[in-house]
Length: 233
Image (cartoon, rainbow, N blue to C red; front, side, top):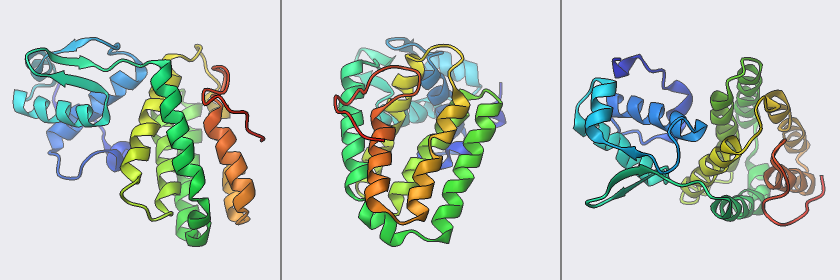
């Protein structure tokens, strides 16, 4: 299959701009399979096999694997090759705690900088989540969910922190997907963002903080609060 046939637009904000079109497409395809569990934790990945699969050079595959390594989705070790990264509850818990600290600590800056353009963008991501949920596309829902939260935090104007949040987001979603029950309530996942938007539109920092903290701390139809703290809705 030619790599150029992959659609990459939903992930445009999650990959380095300088990456080539082919390595970008390989990156997107492999990221999707790792997040959904089609490529299981611990699975060995070889550049030659992937190059044959995607019809591209090993150099192109290497570039994509380097991007995945930067996200923590694969582990590349000298003389030991590349393996899909593990997905442990302890990591998920630590990353959720870090994510909550990043997203909730700076909401006063977000509200100060909130404008019509931000609200339009967030509503666009919400509508895309709803469409993905109705189509049963859990991965696209994840992409748009991550984009929603990344765009919300972007308004805080803390660009050095944003890449850390991006990493927290993708690993939290990977853990959630790999440990969810079949036929997860995808539409409920999308609708959970509605109160967050309402609080932002009302410019209510305290309410926004409480909603977002609860949103992060709980995982729909998976289980308990992974952060170890109970949050008020």
